[in-house]
Length: 358
Image 1 (cartoon, one colour):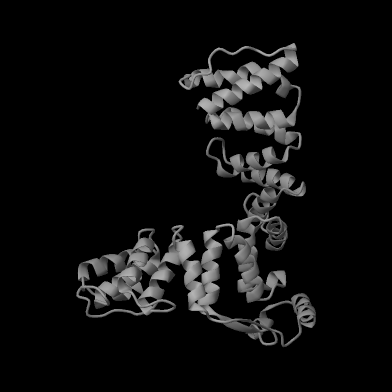
Image 2 (cartoon, one colour; image 1 turned 120 degrees about the horizontal axis):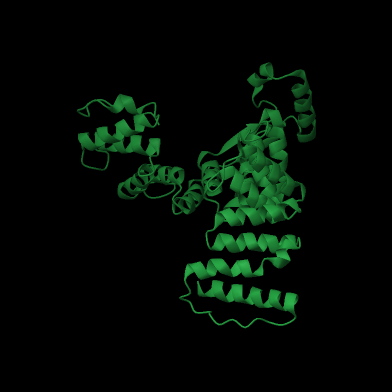
């Protein structure tokens, strides 16, 4: 609070000198100034912003956000955004997208994100790509969304880098992007290096599963489902890559553990669950039931269906723990409620039958 008052006073002095030719003496800069006084401070210094300075208008938006007056913050951001201020355009889009302090309007959100994206703003590019991929406030267009997402990824946006990695990891016919593990790893590592827990989990998954993709044989059955236009594009891609090009990632449990651990420590439930399974099975680490169950329990606290099911299973079988039919069935039941297909087979009441599916 004290730093806020000092900054407001500093701005007041600068603007006062700009308007009146001298600095204004301020008398109240104590840290205990009531909030009502802080809210009045900007009212004394609006004149330069009214002259149409977009940077100052954006600053007012920031200032009002800092005192949680979002209605006035929205007003100033909108003025700046209409003048082309890129940060204000992104923030304005977020206001419309979330609809927490104003009426939600996804079409307006997409419009402002697009304006920021077209100015080369990485955050605007990623957010606009998200609207396109989800069909949120704009006609769904995955190909166009991927284009904008790739631009944001090239500028270092971690969420975008992870998404590009996922496209390469799974492959996508509509984008003429074939499954490419090495390409996926490249993008996952860029995002993971910035601390993105989903990318860290995805890296763990790549090394956990491993695999080889033979581009000459990949998704052969899918040829019957795609158009002639897509088939021509596919052949062109094969000529560029080479029909027999292989993309290989060796299975590496220790590397998988490293990335799962980083994501799990950030409370990523998928990583916690997979890490727990690796401890239970002794994959990449010494088998440790206590450690494995602890991680699986942490994932189950976030209602992870697989974790809930496996807790039911280990207490059903007494696998490293004392059997507990009541606790087992309780976890089975919740897992079933969250859509786990195998959980309902475990709910026998006496632990005498179970289903070992994942």
